[in-house]
Length: 135
Image (tube, rainbow, N blue to C red; front, side, top):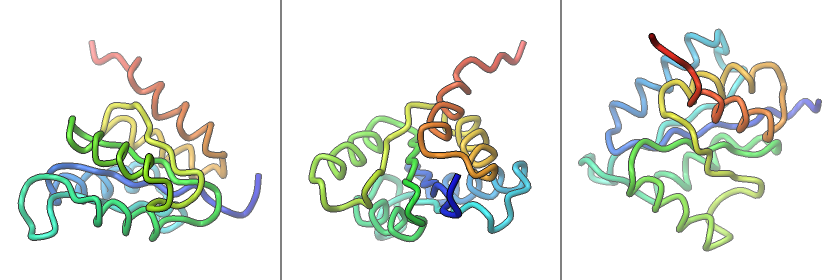
């Protein structure tokens, strides 16, 4: 494992939701500032929706050279990230859209990144959150 830490970006249609999930994940993980996590919620003017500019800025802000895991809430957030990835130069190298539940996946991603795990392990832990049973 290197000294670089995987960055996490949480993309939601709501700035409040993205910020709250980021705070929850960092708090539950006990990660403090050890894991760079950035919310990218809402539109540039503060409305509901997604913003490619906010996503790109968030990804740049958490890039520490170990890759960036991006988790999204709903459909157009996924499309926004896929578009940025397709453009090729809008996001840091080794940025991945992670197919995971938003809240549980965020917590798993941050917990795993806090151990110094690589991007593949962070992605796998977040995706595994689909199997968490509540009953």
